[in-house]
Each structure stands twice: as structure tokens, then as C-alpha cells.
Image (cartoon, rainbow, N blue to C red; front, side, top):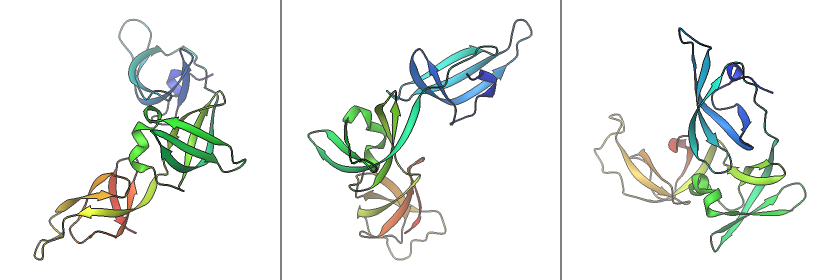
Length: 187
């Protein structure tokens, strides 16, 4: 059991209304009258829905039965995404709605964290950093400078569009932060 006063931003998971939720933000409020409470912003780990909720400070919430497994992305067929467990080679399928937030980071044969709730897979988490190849971008014009912070859009092999420095060209590999979707460095 966990108390709302022990919440940690981005890492605390709670079981609320029989669903697993991630605490995205929270704020302790101590009004002049009445008891203290915690105002939170929660993300449903199954559906991705974001909700604002208030909890009394003395409430106790259960922690969900969540398990993470390393799984390899195999292929996509008719909107179904196929993953394979690295330990026992069991395969799991995800619908497009379940992986909507990570679809632009899916690369065949790459290993991802799959989140299981009560023994069933509910979502996919990409690695923090991924190496992706630039498939399409406009060439940098001689005389333009990267010192001014100028950048250009680049479409990567997974379909993700990021802004990259002018000196990068098609065919080069770059490191992308999957938390923010931004260019980090040349790989």
C-alpha cells in the first residue's frame, strides 16, 4: 500500500478503480480548513488516457501487479504488431491502439520492454535512446551555420520526423531520445 504523500513523479504506479495508473504530476495542498490532499495527474497504463484526480493524504492505495519483459519486435501485418519473448520465445500480438504512442519507434528485431498487468501484455515501452537512420531530408546549403541553432526536418526509417543539424544527410544514423522525440547526436 502506498500513501499519496509518497508519490514520485513519473515512477509511482498505483491501482485505482481496478486499473493500473502512472503518477505523472502531483501537488500537495494544505488548505486553511480541512485536511490536506494531493492533486494528481494520472496516466492509465492500459489505455494511455490522462486524468486529473484528487486523493486525501491519509488514503492508502494499492500497487498494481506489473511485470516487465524484454521482447523483440518481429513484424507488422494488417495493423497487428507481433513481439516475441526473449526467454521462452512465446509471441504476443498488439493492436494499433495499444502501441499508438511508440509506433514511430518500432524497428524490426529491436528489443523493447513490454508491460504486463495481471499476466496480460498492456503496453510497449521503447528503449530510452534509439539509433535510427535518416531516410529523407533536404541537403544543407553551404554557408548555413549550425552555430545559430538552425536545423532541418528529417524523416527517419520508422517514419518519425525530427529536427537535425544542417550537416546531417540521408543515410546517416542518429541517436534519438524516445522520451522527448528529439535528436541527441550523430551515431
